[in-house]
Image (cartoon, rainbow, N blue to C red; front, side):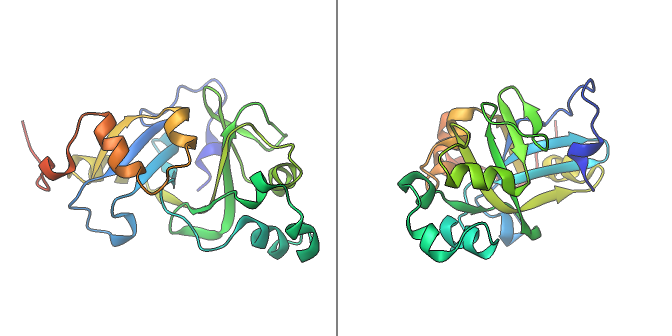
Length: 202
């Protein structure tokens, strides 16, 4: 399922494109407990997003060596910004595949516009650019992604699995990953201790 590829440029986005999904306290799937997910694509065919507040143990220089982009000696000499670039866990699907969400000041042929100034690139070109200091102004990298089949995400939201709110580049790219979940809830005026795990019906 390649949702980003199936969208036509003139097609209006699905209603959750460029939104954050915030896991509710009663989330049944432990892999998504206390997660914040940025939705890259949402259509009748399903949805695709990246968890933005879970980190991988693998460091960016190690990833570059593993992918054969550079050897260990070159990795040691990386500029600090590239050395400290955090690799995140984007989700349980296709965990060996890398995705970079980034600002639109960097684009290659394979870069896909997501919303506004946000693009998604899933090729090694951008990793080379970041390692050489020629990458986008802001970026986050994740291995794997989170995916839902047709109607699945809508059902999970209706069953009180997720909260949603509009995404902002500031929140998407800021470096305070550990506190992102609580800060995002606070930013929309929600105290986590007051969240109910039961679905309400009007």
